[in-house]
Image (cartoon, rainbow, N blue to C red):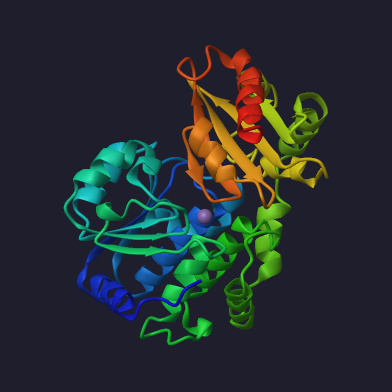
Length: 348
Ligand SMILES: [Mn+2]
């Protein structure tokens, strides 16, 4: 990643110092990086005596409860459960810090409120194409593993931290390590020299990586593993172009008792197959499918998601949606849609 701009760092520090009421916001369906960077910042601000709150557009996966439980929970608002409280909080904030998303539309029902409030807004993110005009200060960097890593490098520059991870509040150090670990899928992708340097400093500062790994990778419900087996056996298709896709429909979601977050990472599994170049995972959600796209180097998940799935994100890891009936007439049409558009994508 590029060196952080000194004047940006100074203005970030000044913005935080001058604000009394600071609110962090993350994207819908928050993952480990969103919750990790959000709670890390919350821990840092709280240690500085700030009135700090983290707003999540909707509920978080159970596997991340270890970051949000206890004292922290009082400082988290789930907008899906308390929209009025979330909007009140945003309106009364002196400073809003958006983490791990590139435009307000990724904050779901909070979009309008975020656009209309007049406070200072800071972006810290690692996705492509940030909506810069909406922010008074932007830290965006795609050459980094995660928002957690970017936030780590920013915090290292703060005058009270002075490049010593041991000076970070313990919850901040743990949460930063968690966000980076989930976004790299435990050091499997998007690992940069700076990523390993961060991991090394955090381990040196006493972060318990075994505790984090136990929570994020070894605490799943049995239903997740059984659903994984069902999907791989019954629902995995691979096209002649090497596109693997799985479609999780409503009936299977209720049959297996699946909740948000339970299917996290499923999209990566088919990439282990030699001839697969791209993997697409669809999950039905009311009037739409939520779409995850992953690709191997040389194929752009981002371009495919942007052109055919109303989305985008990173070069090799993107997301989007498929609307019913705008994009596909009904759920049963989704497979044919994927076959058709990926044939176009790979053969022109
Ligand atoms: Mn991220």
